[in-house]
Image (tube, rainbow, N blue to C red; front, side, top):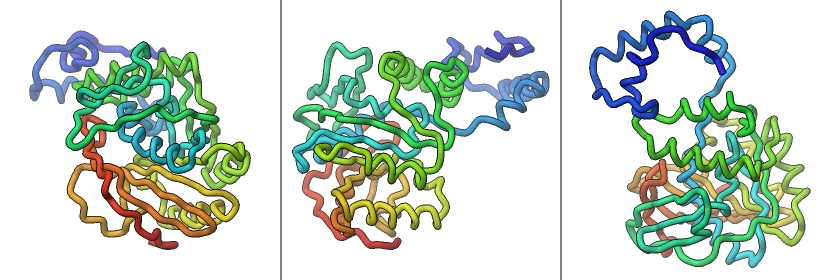
Length: 298
């Protein structure tokens, strides 16, 4: 780990994630500037080489209802493929314990319990069985690398100590069960992973807050690739963030929408599974939303 010069105690007291207890104060800004200037040579390589890649593990609680629907509809185990997984912590969703209000799902002995407020009916049923899991990222992070873990921790807002605790617990699980992550473009790896998935599993692609980082041309290319791949087998996709990829000009109320896509024989349809807090703090299930045709272009 890098060593930072300066007066750590004076800086750390503004960061609850570093056990700081000082309230917000104008004094913090000049101290932060001083710290950056003093450690300029150490900070520049970090800024030049690192990307913003958070792993909000509580989003697994938002993805789970969609995964359950895929498993129920297909009557199959899941072949999970995540685009932009960072360290791939959400690929381990089946190894977590969930508490939706009074409803509990998953293994209560798991090292990680995710609690989410329910604003409608609570998810229920079994955790889907995962046949395979894989992630595609331009810069995958390795939980076995202390520098990568430290970067993930640094990207959590310092006052969100609950999120830091969840991240650390998820990393503990991932150290025992590191998900396979592939470095490169989705266009390179997605066809390989879909075509390589076992025939008995339902291919379920995941995208959480990554589609907005693609260019319009790349999003259009991804749409066409999904439809092409669906000519050979049914493809499911759970999407959080950038709703225009699923439903252009969506006017739904709520902080974020969780969508489920189903593509078969070159055509697609979609429905809304939930409206939710982007950090997974609450979920409002939409079990009565209808399926709609998915346009070939947005």
